[in-house]
Image 1 (cartoon, rainbow, N blue to C red):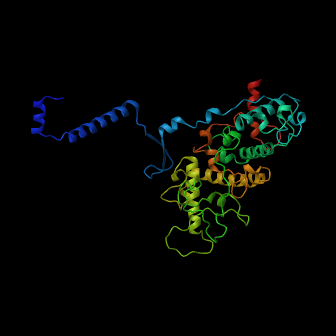
Image 2 (cartoon, helix red, strand yellow):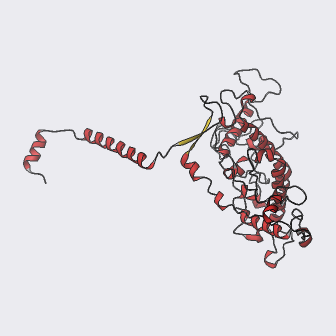
Image 3 (tube, helix red, strand yellow):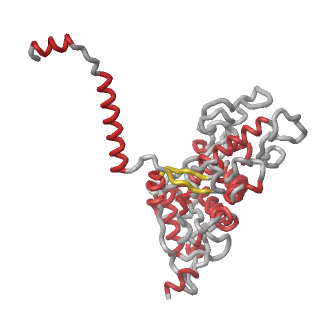
Length: 381
């Protein structure tokens, strides 16, 4: 298609055009990327939270776009201010049958909380998820296991808000409600079950390591660390969270943690880090893991959280094993579903990014007797 003289000239003067073309393309691409970054901003920009002295690497970096996006479930949290009770107002325990936990609430506040629990746990299923006779106006029956479970979970929620205030309200009031774990689903995300012993025919170290599982966060670390540290052992104690030794090739002494326990500890710490979306220096000074005096204040909050989970499992979750139907039990040992850090936090330092979910629910912030409505009394006058 070109003139003959042009083809002849090309044949007589061969030139490698690929090298210059690649160079021009690379320069053009770099200019384009630079123009996009200047025009639209750095897509991988990070913000850092300082957790210790500067220059020691003690900071938790996070992508700014992730911080800006936030937890998508926060927007769906349902809340409603309470009704200030009037003197002599009849209570739910006197109006309705078989009210075992919330009998001290007035009718308006009782039904307000029932409606909220429906929105938090079973918005699609509605009242009938817990009340077998809801369609006929019968709410007294305990025929459905979900109502029995919900009653126990109410007690657990109140216990967490009152007795574990130092963990759930460490910096300011946050609290927990049913939505903290459920997020609009009947079964919360990130519940877990026992998996060990994996091989009943093997003595010693169970075959739960070097397998890429979700429990091990797809590492070669053990997968049974949650049950090892959060459930009482056969002697009625909780296993020690510790590593083997700071020095290498030391003589094992009676009572010293084994290497296997060290790996379980790493697996547990890895789980906590992923559950909160942080790294090691959020709680530890990474140049002195051995020195508890150099831990950050967050270490104290996390330690309380571990104790809280152990108590919740022993007192509120495991006792429900005989209440659940078979399809809700663990696939290996038929045990009740259990919770831990990730069930509430779901990848954020504070559940629901520190939203004060208890602000309008004094009914969930009391163990016995009527709730404290004094904060709303002044506004009502």
